[in-house]
Length: 384
View 1 (cartoon, helix red, strand yellow):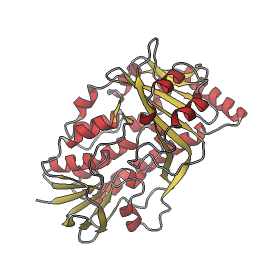
View 2 (tube, helix red, strand yellow; view 1 turned 45 degrees about the horizontal axis):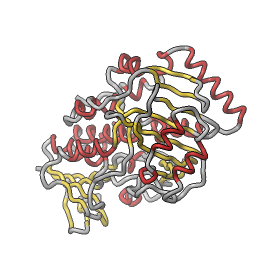
View 3 (cartoon, helix red, strand yellow; view 1 turned 135 degrees about the vertical axis):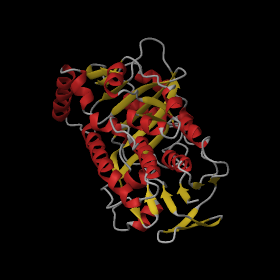
């Protein structure tokens, strides 16, 4: 039986381990943290990722958590709609919903499908030999026919394989993520764009709301890909959010006020500065943020990691074919997401006015044009 060692117990690493195990591989997951309990943030599982999750038996459980209904779109800080569509129109076009759920929920669904004994928390990886598949860890050496490096945006494996690659850069914005109970009164999911600032609101199953925000403030030195406890100065995150968004439309101030201070996460947004030349070397495959860390503007970071996982398992370790299948698609999405991030950072009043006018025109032209922008991303299907 072929053996795979997966480095990293995040969404991508766990998806790869489950997918490979279903294809008959023996798998070992090395996770340096003492447990795989993640920070309390949310993520979007778009139609493309739902189809990928179907191949590893998780799709229907995620679908059951769908809570997006009715209108959604982009607004101004005073609440005026620039463009909008609806969850129902998106479902009709793409055949699947977009599901917003807690990262912890998806981690649990994946971890429960790992073979017994596959997960090794508290295991540091010190080095990988891409030629013979030897993985040096704090618990001793492992031998692998395939090494899956899902070790995040600051991947040590990526640096060793591609030392000339420039690596991750700051995207120019800091992010906040927060959870609160759903407020009373009319409620719609939306993303509001101001002068360099963004605030997003998405309903979750169970009567809760996941919100996120970005703004071009000085970096704090903590990355959203790190499993830390919040980033920034504890006790000041809520005050900072209220300073930036406290006069924005309802229910944004109420959601900020309702979020417990200790649950608000603050991190710098970073992404890879340029695509890698390949996603493999020798017996090693890079996956997820280690391969193509992107800004969150398209909501595709976790989705692309899940796609990576099921494609890698389908190809049974044919790594040149894996690079051929994944490099171009992820590079395109990475570039498009960063372009949107740059547009959200505009603060010049004339530029913001022109941006808003263009979005309003798109909105007036209807759902079809708004949703068409996601066609090539959301209609992806896993290999048969």
